[in-house]
Image 1 (spheres, rainbow, N blue to C red):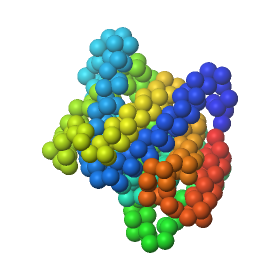
Image 2 (cartoon, rainbow, N blue to C red):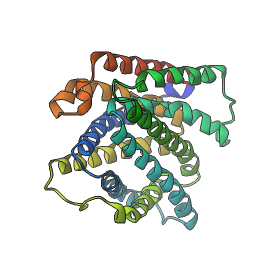
Image 3 (cartoon, rainbow, N blue to C red):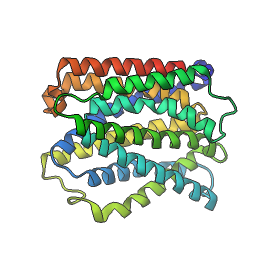
Amino acid sequence: MSGLYGAENWAAYLLALLAGLIYAGGAIAGKKALELGCGQVRTVILSNLILSVCFIPHFFLSPGWPTLSEWITGTGLGVIFLLAQALLFRALRAGDASMVSPLMGIKSILVAFFLVILGFSHEPLSASTWCAAGLTAVAVALIGWPARHSGRSSAKGILLALASAAAFSLLDSMVPHFSHQTDPIRMLFCIFGSLGFLTLFLLPWKEEALFRRGVPGDNWVWRSGLLIALQAVLMSTAIACYRVPTEVNVVYSSRGLWTLLFVAWLGKRLGLNEGSLSPWVKARRLAGCILLGVCILLIA
């Protein structure tokens, strides 16, 4: 990974590392909210609205007004983000956070593929990338192999997590290309400004009052929304302002390990269902997470 050691990119890697740590907390909070009965659509709406608000300052930090072309591009990217975010929360409802988060680590490999497929990279896929793709299948099996009595729900969670990872990977491969054709800060405002507007169309399908605060799970919804929004601000800044999306995702994939550690440490204390997973399942997921890290380094 030639770009990984460039001094000019270290800010991006630090942002991605911090984003991965914060994401782990957000994923666990979101999983807890869903287990306490909070609606998935409402959770997505709150998370995206909070995220959109966080990007309002970007309008004042960028010179000039967004053009029609920038709004069209930003809206298209916002649609992809909305789909990816919805799939992510659906995956968290169907599967364990300690399974979903490590699986999202395949983003690094998928970003590399999308960069080539979309023509944003002039380098062909190397033999190590193909090797990493094969080993990734083994890592996914280790992480997602169902715990006892959870086969169908585990398989559903795996498929949804992989779909979410693919959507986020497509987004991450496109954002640097389009953001560097204009002002990156202004493009981020267009993407997440349009995301907030698009999210409003989900309001008729919310399961309960949007700003309800009377149920224990409601506090977890807000915690999740704030943490997910904060990590998205950090990660999107690293992606848009530095042209090293694959390398940034390598560092960001640490969120899988953070989530595993948080679940092992706090799972039972928080009353998460996955807190009672057997040591064998936890060890297997950790092994898969480490193997996935090896796969990612192969393409670095």
